[in-house]
Amino acid sequence: MSRPRISINLALSADGKISSVSGRASGWTSKDDFARLKELRLSADALLVGRGTLEADRMTMKAPRNPLRCVVSRQGHFDPTHPLFSSEGGPIHLLGTEHPPTAIPATTAHHGSLPGFIQTLSCDHGVRHIHCEGGGQLIHELASLDLLDEIHLTWAGHRLFGGQSAPGPTGLPGDFLPASRHFKLMHFEPREDLGECFLSYRRVAEA
Image (cartoon, rainbow, N blue to C red; front, side):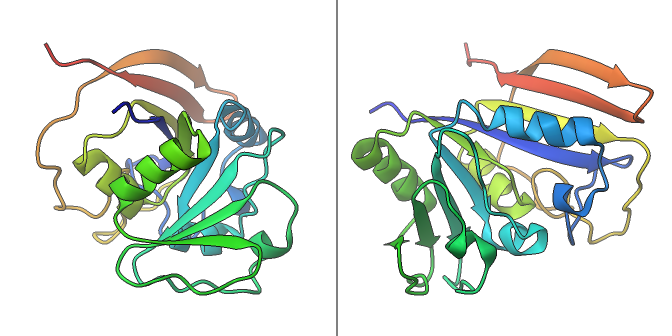
């Protein structure tokens, strides 16, 4: 059975780390990067984030085509007062992988594995492209399952997060993937005026 195409989009500081506190919504990357974030959402049938990223960035996950707005949590705890649940946009789907998610009106709750959730989105909702915007733990799981097809990065050389506990694009330091994943650089756009570089990679099929 074919699965949806899965892409990710992240911003990295100069040392290759992602913020463990906040992301694009805090304004630490440029307006051009934020415009790129919105452009990358345009082709998605579903947007996907982890609960920590949702809360840190106060995301509402809006996009013109009203894709499904999907949030993953291990414990299934969600704050009903979060702006996501009072904003207009696509249908909201909440996944609790270890415990059922908090019951919130006008949302669809799921309890099970991430691969099972992806299959449900494909089979029951016609999703062909899932676009994930973090955080590191969720992307680590997608990479571990070898489910990533496209990677879009903004390298922000003007910011340095650092710290032994600062996560990278695939999670915490030392939390290695089970094997290498092979991608080809498809887009390289250095912006010296911004102190940033926009990059895109595409999965390379194994021989």
